[in-house]
Length: 590
Image (cartoon, rainbow, N blue to C red; front, side):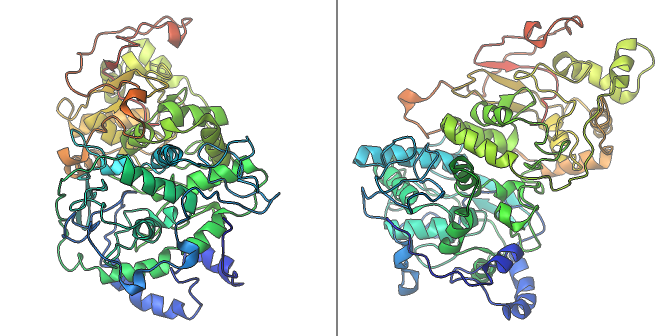
């Protein structure tokens, strides 16, 4: 199918850089004046704090937001260019052009033959469309936000605690009362791409529709087929959002969409820009579109809009976000200390596939993203994403590189007078992360030269020391490792001391942590925020690798650090290779 795009106004690029788009097209310059008046009203609906990248529950009817029986009004109808493709019709592009492939796992576009560069045909049978939809659901990470522990896949209920109140992820199973079973395909696509419910009301931008606007008709059609024909309907209502009036008013969200969310046409044109090769184009599509990486890893403005939606919008894109659920997303650009500058394409690919590599382990929301999503992507797609991320220049080009410093290691080995932070580290952390901070890569992550450890914001380090974390098993790395929390064992002052030591040892150069910082984090955390990701429904049960349960974890065992000449792989570690291992030192941030 050939895309029918309207002519691009000359002002598209300038407005794209300012982040101002409209679902009706690009907003003209005169709206800058109106913007100054409307922005305060919009900001009333968003408090200063980060919104998680997920579908948010909306009005308290049926599913509390994603209305299962809402009927589209006349203004809700899609334009021809936004309509879903007819079944079994391959999507074509100009022959010879480098665009983004809609083909799951492909690295090039569909040509006039209906095949990608690797010779893979577009879906032709119903089963092929369903399989494609499963893959798209994994790439878009739907399960991470719409599935909660001990609940059916996609039945919703995940709580997002925000400064304005609590949002609950909606039931997106094909149940006709509590889910999306009554939605037409055009309503489904409009909600995903434009953030508009069937009843015409706007979704909260916790649903990353500014990113999903880039998704192809083929991918969205496959996703609809998968949800409606394969996902089990669940008659489970979801709690109504707990957002007090007037912040619960919805009309500012319409203005927000006009100002900050691109139209599907503009979004696709932006992501289908020319690239050096088809692999980079595919990576850009996955990262900027279904992967919605910028929803967490890009800083947001006063109205909670992402300051950049693509790499074309400037270096703010993927340069690191503000805290989400108590975790601070790091930069995914080329900063040598706080970004991915020291990571190779292979490092990134391994991390996305297994949730761990020689440089770190996934935790918090990133663990869920790997567990439910990226582990199921093909090697070709993961490499495409990694190559695209490595193509992004540093947002801080003059950042110094990490230089190792053995002073901390010598102090810990000396057995002499130690600071409180050094003593606490030896007693609680060194058995797993070693006195030189290198850990046992792919098992217990390194703390030295770790981008999250040296992040200017210490939130993630404090959070993981307080509550611990589990690196869940994946198909590529089935063993799981759990670090216990130290909230009940260490005081605020002690946690501040050991965190400050970690952030300033072995060559790390980051600011100190105070007991006030720790106290503030304690008050922000609650049991609702420590939801554990269940096994992902992205693949059929018979194809899923067995994943560990977070219950009844074995007690940690005492381990001694191996002699200096012994490699980490030779070092004894407790129950390595079993489905789950508990250790007693802080798991290094990713």
